[in-house]
Amino acid sequence: GIQVEQSPPDLILQEGANSTLRCNFSDSVNNLQWFHQNPWGQLINLFYIPSGTKQNGRLSATTVATERYSLLYISSSQTTDSGVYFCAASSGGSYIPTFGRGTSLIVHP
Amino acid sequence: DVKVTQSSRYLVKRTGEKVFLECVQDMDHENMFWYRQDPGLGLRLIYFSYDVKMKEKGDIPEGYSVSREKKERFSLILESASTNQTSMYLCASSLTGTVTDTQYFGPGTRLTVL
Image (cartoon, rainbow over all chains, first blue to last red; front, side):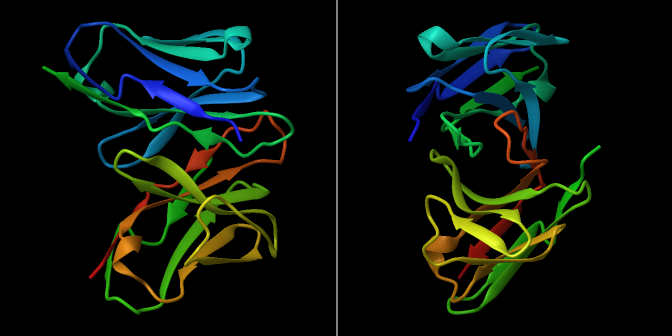
């Protein structure tokens, strides 16, 4: 099946800093999602982005499908951005996503 | 908004007990999923269901079973709990079986098996 790798595994920022999280995948994708898991465990879907660029407030995501990677940008980070960010992808005819191991982000005030 | 609820946020059980984790979604979604999450390993799929009474094994089904008698409810069963099943369990649902689906997650159940 498809392999999904995320980097960096851990990230520590000061409030106000910008960051880029990366997701590499091993096959062409028909579905790619970014999720944020807050410190209490709740996962929230941030983006559905198998290709192209999307923006939602301070967050944006870009997927370059031909080069098999996706980037999540966080600008002007806030303490509420802390948590774990997951990338999940599926390929072929499957709608079952494979999750990466996540990037753990801590934003200090 | 889609709402996915799980029966317990925290659960402590003893080795050998039969454990039921329940998940309910309120948006008439066809697909439901059970994952476990362990530090450094991400989310791993245990079982999923694409219709009532239908189920498919995921990547790590050993030691688990599932039940889906009604569309809105998907139960995960640990027949005889073991300490290596101590984990965070996450339920998710999605609307249909198309590749453009997005998943919606419940708040999770943190299970400790003593």
